[in-house]
Image (cartoon, rainbow, N blue to C red):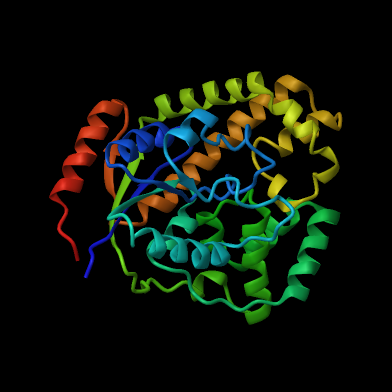
Length: 305
């Protein structure tokens, strides 16, 4: 039977995943599968820090620009689609990279998600409440119903909040009680790396990245989407703060500072998720060349399941 290896490069935003993954994928003559839950959407690019045109051209990427912000797209949908694509890909290649900072989406690929109940009527009701009352009301409700799960998810992502509340309401039980640690059998082996940086370096990277986003036209990108601001895909860091600025709720400088603050909070939640998983090998990404050599060595030494 042909051996296949999925190499995960995970880490918080602005840790350097894109640059390193492209170097490695080029060296190993393979492709990158994205597990970034915001880079699926073709209409939003600057605020999601997608790879640029040159980077996307240098290495083939899957699951970037493959959806519209109008689409309803869950982690379960992603799991089904990416497993199919990976199985097709591994008929041609032995190695692929999974790259991103969305812990739930990485887990969907590597471990598989639990089959949780759905009720589209409840979901619609929660979406209506989001539009009417705002995300803070729903955040507080989830915090009350399932404080354990609330601590571990991206609480600024309305889709995550709504899905969690949906399960709580349907079952009358906390969402977290349905999360088993069992792993679905996959046709490929896994090797997982977690990129990290000292907090001061990471936070400086975040500040520089946000400044570059503004310079590259984030405000103009958000302005072009202002009639769609109620879509879940746009209720996210980098977009909601600029919407507030455009609507006169804050000034430009404050909006930019809020993006930096919220991105740092998000990076902290990302690391909280990743730290729960002992299967990651930690790689200090301060020196990208050292990281590259270390990962290549570990790939070479990898023993298949």
